[in-house]
Image (cartoon, rainbow, N blue to C red):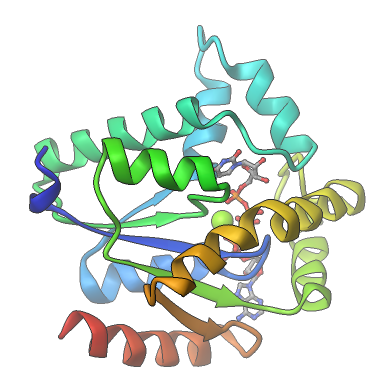
Length: 197
Ligand code: UP5
Ligand code: MG
């Protein structure tokens, strides 16, 4: 697909900030197609015959970032399919890019992002949410040890990506601490101004 045919928003925020929750709401309101990099990686990990299963499993458990070639390819495939099958023109790319190399690669080979939606949340609140979700989620990384590692990767590796876009004036930052409805109301207002609808 041609980069000019699609609008891409990167959705970033720490583990448990509420990226997935807010994306689901944005889909209903704006008709975005929601692609979670983490979900695509978890699906690839389960796909019979995948050569990346073990690599993905170990990265996710340790809160490490899967080599970008894998993730960029999964995203590009999913986008191509959505454009072709559903005529999608607007994408929310959730939980990506979380390392500078991914950001540069994606914008070079797939398409530039229109803006970055950044959900800002204190670590203590994110930890509370993830530990609560961990009781039922079955996610291999919703446990105290993996959560600690995910936070560390977020601070050391992913925040520099947010800072990079911030310097370019491309970040829409929303406080993700309040209840989901409240976070969504603010998100809608901010995005509406920027996207013009
Ligand atoms: N919740 C949500 N909003 C709330 C609110 N306002 N108030 C109270 N509770 C709220 O929410 C998390 C929990 O909090 C839920 O129970 C929700 O109900 C509640 P969710 O919306 O799921 O938050 P989200 O930010 O999406 O959290 P998630 O756990 O998905 O974030 P991560 O960024 O850690 O997970 P992701 O799936 O993106 O990545 C997982 C791993 O994949 C990474 O650690 C990494 O190993 C790998 N990965 C890569 O290697 N490369 C990539 O590009 C992407 C991922
Ligand atoms: Mg998520």
